[in-house]
Length: 184
Ligand SMILES: [Zn+2]
Image (cartoon, rainbow, N blue to C red; front, side, top):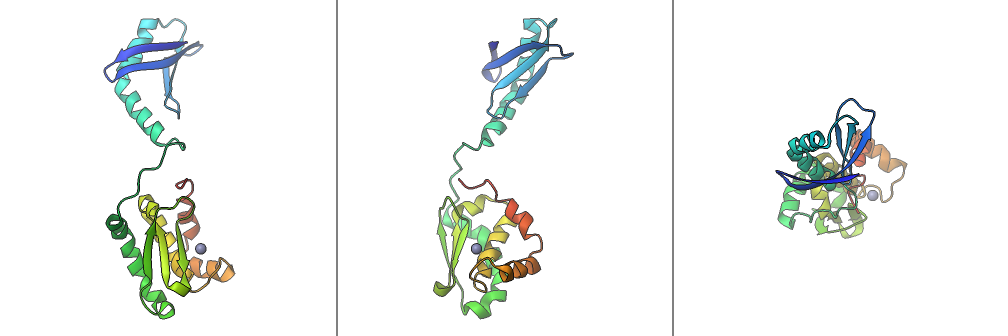
C-alpha cells in the first residue's frame, strides 16, 4: 500500500508491504521511489517512525539514485577555457612524440557532440575534442587524446593502430571502458 507521511525533509510517499521479515527494511529504488517491508506485528506508527528517522538518509539516497538514472540529461559541459585546462596537459604530454609526423602543433577544436569523443583529421592537422570529455575521468581524457594523436600515424583502427596504442598505453581498453554510457 502507498503511505504518505511528513518528515523533516518534506512529505514522503513510500510503498509498504507486510512480509515475513524480522525487521523493518527500507529501500530506495534506482528511480527514487521508496519501498518498506515490515513484519506483520509492526504497527503502522512504528513503521512511520522508522521511516521518519531515516528521512535525511532517504533524501540523500534519492538524490544519488536520480543522478544516476540514465534518462537524466547530462550536465552542460564546462566552458572552453575550463575544457582546455583539463585537456592541455595531455595534449602537451604526447605532442613531442607525434611532432615529427604532424610537423607543427595541431589545431584543437572543441565541439559539443553526442556520439563521439573526438576526431582527428591528419590532413588538416586538426584534432576535435568533445567538450563533454571534460566531465569524464582523467584517465579516459588521456585515452581519447592519445587515440586522436595516434591517427596521425594510422588513419584507421587497424592492427598497427592497436599495437602502438598497447605499447604507449597498456591499459587503454580499461580506460576506454570508463567512457561507456557517458554520452547520450
Ligand atoms: Zn579513432
